[in-house]
Length: 385
Image (tube, rainbow, N blue to C red):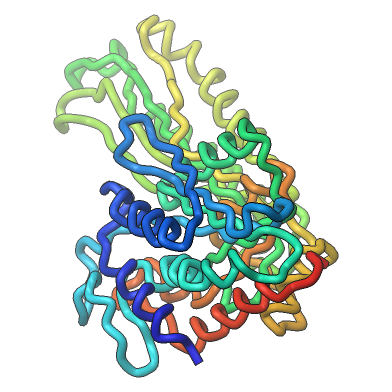
């Protein structure tokens, strides 16, 4: 059964508005102060204007480096969604905790914090580390700073468990998420004089058509990676803007697009194909107006993740979760960043991604109880594998 202290702390965290556009410092300071009361020091790393921070803390500081419990503190917004409860109310009813971030992923953080004192004084031969990050939902920006700080400080954890909602089934792979903006500069003219212009929307449309050709090629030709809902890489356009009037050939246009690449694919090679396509279009544009062309902006690059059922941390997660199987997940996480930093990683946490980002987001109390049992079990683990 879920402890009262863990549920109350989960409710407290859900009640904090940490949408990515806002500061997360209220949550970070709450966690820092809670840990300080049990004698645990926290390392904070900041964004550029110090409105957001990561927290890293070691429970069992006298022990060798051990297992990270990783969670992001930010949430997606709920603007325009049809909620039946206040998204910050942390309502408990029908065996569920409702509220933004309840599944994704404040409840995992709350349970780890509620067990912090037990973890700090456990008999486990290795330390447990808490890693709380900012801005995961908009590009995993905080985790990059946190991992760089660990590297600079010479802290080398043995493994990482990212507590994203997997129904407490350990996940050993997910796709990457690479998002870009393409800006097109054309040459404007009266629409009766189109030969004297470069239509930015039309040039952007040629790029979009090229992206669609790539997407169809992935679906048609890419080797399948069974286990994913969509077992091939995908590409899509999310936004398109351009033009000022019907009778003005548009000078400017822009669109945003993304690749979701299989762990076996190369998203940067996909982006290079887009750049190459743009370079092929530019000579004809610049014969009309030399200042025309394309530019690209990186919005986020979240690497794919590929672990293994044979990794010690995966075997540990299977044992603690009392599961016999692993899974793959479609959504991106910070796991690829930890894995690429040389830290064996698995994704395992309470709740379902089907509830995340939705109106009336919730996590069941049964899932939270399983997560609490999982973390308590980590405190009594005698070896990583």
